[in-house]
Length: 338
Image 1 (spheres, rainbow, N blue to C red):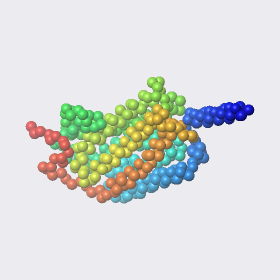
Image 2: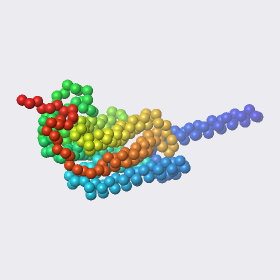
Image 3: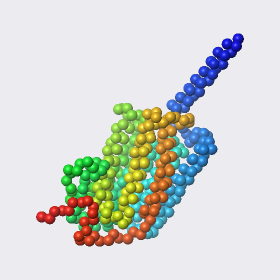
Image 4: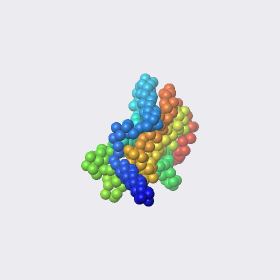
């Protein structure tokens, strides 16, 4: 009789464990949860974490708005919109990440919005460096006897044999075009992705050869590298001339936003899709990876917003004229005299 009871208890325990495993497995396979599911599953730690991160996102946007007011009042008209666009990278990404954190099913759209905004920032940062010199004509006048070193990252940092390119109006136009194509085509491919998503064709987790994501995302990655190249070329040319305007830390913040918003997010998402990040109900493994990425971005963009405010809050006086014998130490090759 006692042996039968022990066997029954073991069978009951095994059945309960199997039911629990099946419930967990079912939760890991479920779709991304709704916002109300997250709110209902928040414990004390979750409430504190979500509150702090939301507060950081709100403060980031308030700091950006205050900076926009300062720029509108103190900055020359030809630089206002450009500097506002560049300043808005971190606050916009933090705000979109906050929305994605509270509404996980909107993560794809919030990430696309952040990526489109940063694609425009890449182009605007290039224009900002030219405008800090005084505009296209002033840049050509200052750099007319220099050559551009194009063996820079991210495309050709190892190709030291590449020739130097003369700085002309045509070469300046090509630099701008190289960055502008990313700002334009990124928006085009984002709209295409949304259209395909409504048709059930585009799925970020579908990495098969027949999926749209496996074709669109690598192509956008190539466009990104091509767009970053002209910015790097221009920075290498003007980094000493604009040193007094803190162009080096500004460029570092721009690169940091790029790495954190693009590379870091991609790595976390890949780990989640491969199952390296475990699921935690109500989040599947992929949804939890997206959630971790959003939370990290809010914290990182909050810090970058504060640093960026210090870098761009200054008097925007005209750049001093270049001395005739000053080569700006820009690592450019001087045009050889005939």
